Image 1 (cartoon, rainbow, N blue to C red):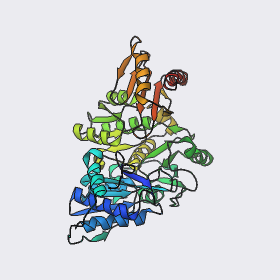
Image 2 (image 1 turned 45 degrees about the vertical axis):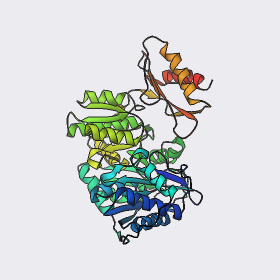
Image 3 (image 1 turned 180 degrees about the horizontal axis):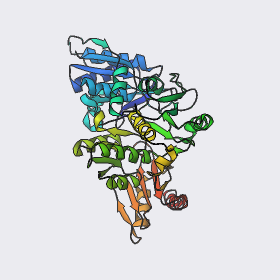
Image 4 (image 1 turned 120 degrees about the vertical axis):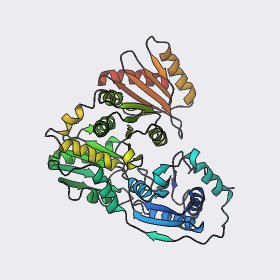
Length: 449
């Protein structure tokens, strides 16, 4: 029996093309997915990686072998695939490895209405079926229909956020040679926004930089271009364009927590008293601002499955993560960086001030960003940190996801283990940079011995 544990992750399937992922295994995964979700059809999209068209075709062969039809939407961002799943009310599969290097590819799958599929909700079952072998069932093969969803996707987003009354804006967009280069021109078509494109050429080898805007080195070009052309803001998308990172008119990064608070405020104005979801490494400014605006902040663990689960449970209107994933009830509770970007630009265009002044209202504290430490024993290091701080007066500790420690000063940190590597991930927030540095160094001294 083959072992596919290396490619079946917590929330998706991902691996090295040719070594771990090839047409044969993907065909079987497609068949297993068809058995999991049943008919009548599955919608399939893919990114610009060289391997994506072939792998998505193999997946379609597996689906149709089980007697299930396929709606192939071709090139797509991940949030466009979620749109198609919601709009067509069909299960979906997106071929992308997001911001991973060119040698990788992967599959994100969802049920009808973009409902997530993770280890506990279907991935483990699919893995087991493929490992044990998938005998053909003799069904009448399904059919493949090709359909473009780009126009409908763009029109839907523009119905959710009206930019027609915005003042003219000049925006630099770095697509990182990823799917933003395909979706941005259509979404912004006809709006009072001048787009200055960077790296819009679809190229899965990522010749200019990794398509991961959370790594500071990957937004250097964007920051320089914003300053050079005097733009009002800059946007950077990751490879599959489901995450969006923002820089202001000075080229300075805007924290995803500040974006979460800004968008939450706009959504609460639309539906007062609604619930807003945030994860536990998001700035504490987010629940403060949500409460001040009459909303109900609800805290979750890190990870999209927890966000989506809590959104469904609480009927939350919006959810944000510090990783620049933004989730909208109006978008089938799925994440879409493009819709978050439209909200930011609408807020900017509705007033005369610069983005730096607008977002300053939502950025109240200093933060460390995520710091990884390689450790031999995650549990022992976490316990050592817990013992150190639990002995101090006025300290609050919770263990919803790893270890979150809040000090009497209001400073806090979260230390949580990676699920896939021997790492501990540290996030620190405090009143200013000096306080962040002091607490960061104190915790790291314990973690790293």
